[in-house]
Image 1 (cartoon, one colour):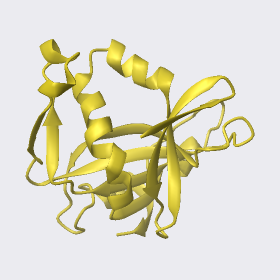
Image 2 (cartoon, rainbow, N blue to C red):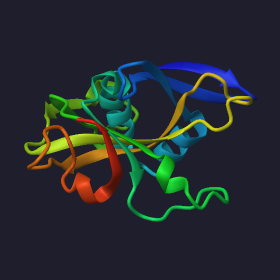
Image 3 (spheres, rainbow, N blue to C red):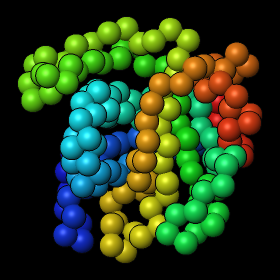
Length: 166
């Protein structure tokens, strides 16, 4: 993960790929990382640093569009633009809340059995102000794996508008 400053904001950049295999850059504003930290979500931060960073290039399944209505900044079709990436990392990570300021205390564990890791991102619609990021990372988590498609979340057929690759 590297840092850049654009339009007066610090953006963390993570390399990844899209469903065609082309390299893409995924951004996450520092303000969002600070908000996660302030909520006491040490595990989320650990997953960001240890799984998302470095993992986006290993995504196996790609989906577009969420099958639930979503309005973002007046865009009533924001759900249709979401990009969903999933894969099976070998490891998960744990960071006890009491040790959240000591990164040496991050523990690695085997990935949860029967789970895939999912990242939801949105296309960067403001390339004029933020030219580096192709997509903005929004969420990441472990999800049960589909019985019908390896490396995909359970019920992917009902969750997403279309499968791009997988």
